[in-house]
Image (cartoon, rainbow, N blue to C red; front, side, top):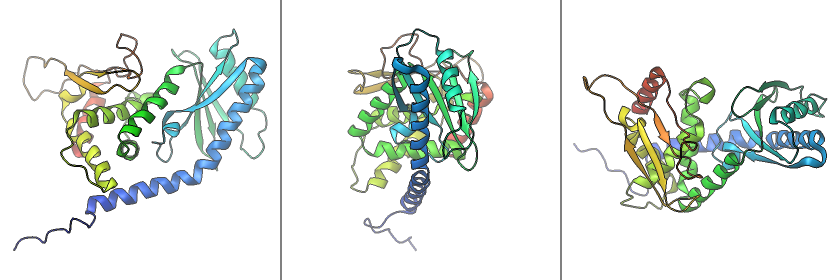
Length: 299
């Protein structure tokens, strides 16, 4: 006979799984919230001591500030100052301050990447804390991204949980982060926003979890093909929270249709005007692109 129909008032199995995952994420994050705040405060105090009167502020950025972090997410802090010194010098001074005994915290481990375009100080507080923190200097972009995501979520509240589930999926499936040759997690989040803006919502469920899952499902449907990650995505409308976005696919190369190819993803920074310096995407290796395709189709 026919399978029994589910009562519209009853949650679906997918709803129940999503609720469980979101609750689990929330529980894990609540356990680390206090220690993360303490670590940010430690970085702030070290920056004040290192810079003296030239210190302006230390700002939490990244997924933690956007409220889309998943368990194990790094902390990202930008230190702003008015000193006439190189960024690397500032980071070395901050590192020296943090290398002093910190009450209640284990001795930190440091890695200063001075040769990168944007110098980064990575701090690792080992067990029992086991949290990483990336510190950069005088970079307004990350702070602008936090404000942009906040405006997007204010206009479409289910996006916050959708992006949180997406970040959780990235970590569970071990999708390579930027440090391992993949895209930054923020790029995936912006792709989630792009998906929601380009999709027609025929219905609006009062069930918030149902709306979250709609956005997650649309993301996987949109980016499951190799063409979807080869091309340009441009945000339109007033900055910094433009009203829409569009995708221009890269030209398909001549040859057999089943050959894997990748021409890179050009993703305009939605907080900047489109130019050569605002591309947040780039080209990943063909192996990484193939992994993306496999995992997105599997999702």
